[in-house]
Image 1 (spheres, rainbow, N blue to C red):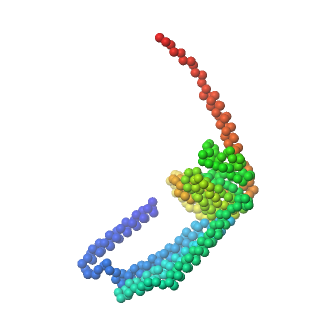
Image 2 (cartoon, rainbow, N blue to C red):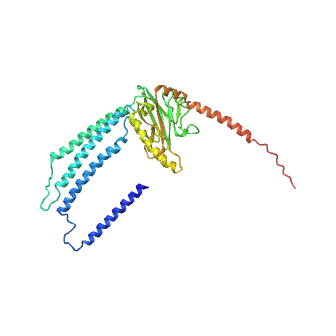
Image 3 (tube, one colour):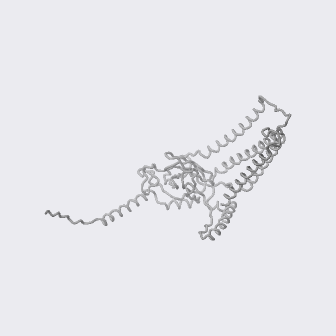
Length: 383
């Protein structure tokens, strides 16, 4: 609310200044024969200094943003390929800052140096092959280098040979507004699935007639092992979603009617990542803010906020509907031993189906027995 009031005051102040300027112009009418529509040397000089002022503001704000918001950028990638993604991003940022610094400085400097004067005439070049060659070749070479490096990194990340590599296959199923995971069993092959098969506890639409589906397992919390490549197969039930795991530098669209995939190898367990000094500092800062907010909530008779604990998250990075912001799943990176123990405790989908059918058959006869009634015969008397 305070921010809104500040914005309203600034807007009203700007309107007031504009109106005062118009009133001042009206008071000056008839006092000079000078045509205000033609810029004078004084006007051009003022504009030149204003351009210098804008350049200074641009650089100051850029430095301020790096100092204040720079620490908020995610670091410490939690996957093997994350360092390549971060390196490519950092190279891009450095090039952008260098080019922006040089070009903006030259733009504002030359705008001031060659500002219009009464006796100055513009020098017009119809063509300059040397300059055109320079400003065409340099960007082309730099962009080609970025693109080639990006393609190299993308190919290394995306290429997965399921037959040769030792990978764990997990399906991520997106729907408004949540995620479900399906683990391939000992055969490491996911059973076929189709939305037509969605019924009861089979919320993923798995074809239970497929032999490969018999040992598949479902979960609402994603567990993955450290040091093992995980191949995610992604589907969507309804609209376009995007599986986004920022700490693992992983993102892939989930498209209705088709299967997409992304693979990475986790390099930290959840507990190891929580112990990283920068993460500890960020968590402490968040809890400090939450504690401050809790004091205000308690004073208003509301429930205080719980302390924050870091967790990896699977998010949706597409605006998929009203509850898009809340579409997330907790991701837990375990040691290989803990992951095997966790997965072994999960029942297979075929076991869940059998238990659900048995429970249904037990309930149905009971309902029928309770609803059975003996009806008395109806006698019609004739007059």
